[in-house]
Image (cartoon, rainbow, N blue to C red):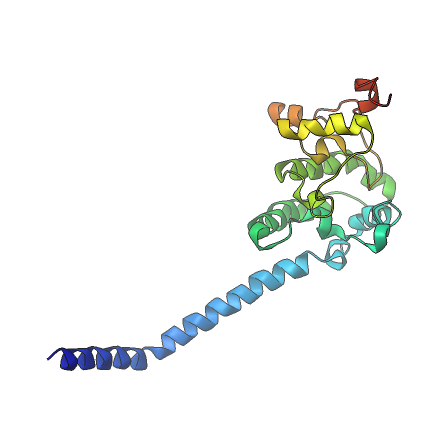
Length: 213
């Protein structure tokens, strides 16, 4: 009796999938295609070639190539290494960055004239501040991919790094490292006030005058 019931259930299941194999295969194929498009699209949009396809981004890319970050230890970082969170766990952040920042900058690219470096510099401070806020929100994760466990030699650096336990992150202090220098911004105050707050660059040697003794 039980054997007969099991046989009947098996036949029913087999018949069901035999009849409905087409929508299942179409759904699976569509899902696979969606995965390929999303992940492939994100990878394509993260390339330096795509980033510098906008003329304005050729300026900061040239600055990157002449910075201390480029070529150090044989590494040649690209735009995505600093400006796009990497890894599957951060994929949602990468997509959000492309959608939000990409759409905004594409719009501004059409609204502003960046034909010369001088014209680009008119918005450089604003763009640098926005990039800093991104890094602040990510807890500088793109910095930490290479600088996993920095151990400052100078006592001033060691004291400064104690701020990390108080909610500070790399970009709070380490600004103007790669691209042309602009005004230092207080990111905590900027987030609190909802607008860019220009401040003096932090001088940890001055803050801790005995640090190097």
